[in-house]
Length: 288
Ligand code: C2E
Ligand code: MG
Ligand code: MG
Ligand code: MG
Image (cartoon, rainbow, N blue to C red):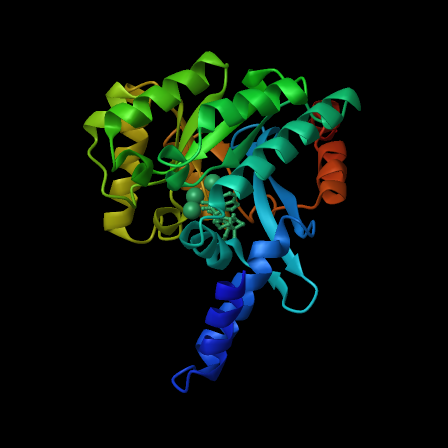
């Protein structure tokens, strides 16, 4: 403790300390307290059937609100949480919060489709991901088939065999697995046939450039063809425009996530969205 104080006061008087690193230190200290102070919440982005426009699932996305700093983007604080050794605890919080939400929405008859949670690649070498998921499913009495875990290709870098064990254990819980940001990592495609993955999520950076950019469009076509031949589900991320949707429909990409249909929504907003997208209402509006 006294050593810690000593180190901090030394840092404060260090002449080389610039505004940027002071700001970073402040964010680090706040991030360390964020879980305890209940500053995290989840937003939910609908996954939409590209043909029927019905809601087929949702992705939980973490939001951090600090009283002084305001909202901080996960793109900024997740890498920091990984660096500071906080990510496993944060992931576990997210998995539990998602399971709790699944149970609540199911009980209230609001939403009964699968919801995905993102987990850090570091969770494959730190902590025990499968055990954490099993605990959360038990605590909240949730059927594993209603939970999906989104992982990235970097989860396999350390050891493919270790990752495979974790993924198999998750599959045994009934949990669905998707590969996020597909195409952006250093992917050895051979793992796709060897790991029990259910879904590929085409990264938004590719989707952003279809159909205008020839090279990108060909990549998206190739990913779709591969997903179909390996019998994997396909989700396109970051769909913002009608012509992107049309291009993806053409490739038989069934699920769409993006601002074209909806931004990530608060719990209240998501409930309203579900209300507005009930199958019966869609059927009525189609026939009228
Ligand atoms: P991701 O898992 O690939 O999530 C998709 C990101 O794209 C989200 O950003 C979402 O808000 C954004 N997005 C969705 N549709 C559109 C669109 O049409 N246009 C644009 N421009 N963006 C769109 P977000 O919420 O800022 O999250 C960023 C990343 O942070 C996530 O990427 C994921 O890697 C990470 N992340 C978010 N929540 C968690 C979490 O609970 N745990 C962990 N470990 N990582 C998380
Ligand atoms: Mg994701
Ligand atoms: Mg992604
Ligand atoms: Mg990402």
